[in-house]
Figure 1 (cartoon, rainbow, N blue to C red):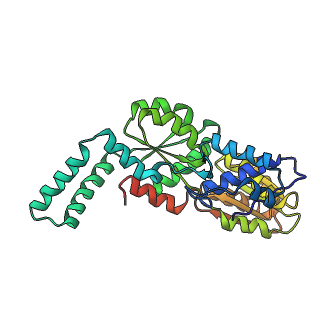
Figure 2 (cartoon, rainbow, N blue to C red):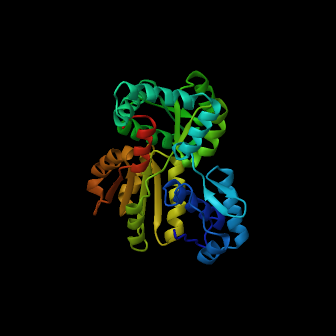
Figure 3 (cartoon, rainbow, N blue to C red):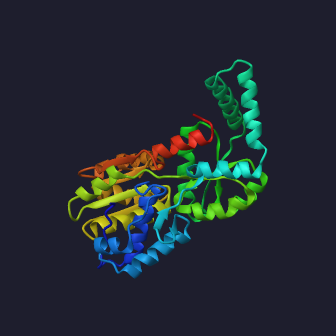
Length: 327
C-alpha cells in the first residue's frame, strides 16, 4: 500500500495534503488504472484522519475525473484513453454494424491469395500504421494558468515521438478541435476530466499520460539533514505548488523549501546561494547551472544539482507511441 503522511499541525489543511498525495499516486501510476483505492477505514487507520475527511477527498478525486465509484464495490482509478481499448473496439463495431463482416471478408480474400495469417496481419498493420503516421497530430493541453506544465509535456513528447506537437491552452481546446478534428489530445491525468468534457462531444480521443514517480528525488528529500535548504526549479507553477505540499507532508518544517519558475532569475540567484540541493526539470537545468557558475565566487559550497530527466513516465510514452502507430 502507498504510504500517505499527514502533518496535523500544518497550515495546509489535512484534506489538501491527502488530495495532493493521492492525485500524485494516481498520476505517477503508483495507483494504476483499475486499481481499487483503500477504504476510508484503511486510510483513517494509516493517516489518523476522520473518515468523513477521506470521503471528501475521494469526492474531489471523482469530480476531477480521476476515479469512479462502483456501487457496492469501492472507488477505482478510472481507465482512460488507450486503457479502454476493448470498450472502444466494441463501440466502433456497434457504430458500424457491417465493419466486422468487412474485416472478415478482407482477411478471407488475402488468405485465398495465398497469404498466411501472420503475413496478412503484417500487411494490415503496416497500412494502418502508415496512415496513422500521415494523419497523426498531437495536441498537448494544460490550463493557461499553468501553461508551463504543457510546455514541459510538449518538449518531452516532441523529443520522444519525433513528430510535431502543438501546445493548446485548455481554454482554447474546443476552438482548436473544431479546426483540427483528426488530432489526438494528450494531457496529464491532473487535467483529464476537463479535457474529456471538451473533446468527448466532438468525438476526439483524449489520451492521459502518467507522470514519472520521482522516486529518486523523494529519497533525496527524505535524507536531507534537518534545517537544510532545498530548492526546486521548474517551468510549471502547478508542479511547484503540488511538490511543496508533498514535501511538507514528508518533512513538515524540518527543511526549508525554496521554489522558482524558470523565468524568476532573482529567486534562482538567491536559491543557488542558500540551498544545499536543487532539483530542476530538464528545461531549467542549464539556467540553474549557469546561475551557480555566476555566483561561484560568493558560494562556499555549491549546491548539488539534480536534473529530473522526465516528467512523463517511460511506459506512458511507449503506450502513446503504440496508440499513434509510431512504434
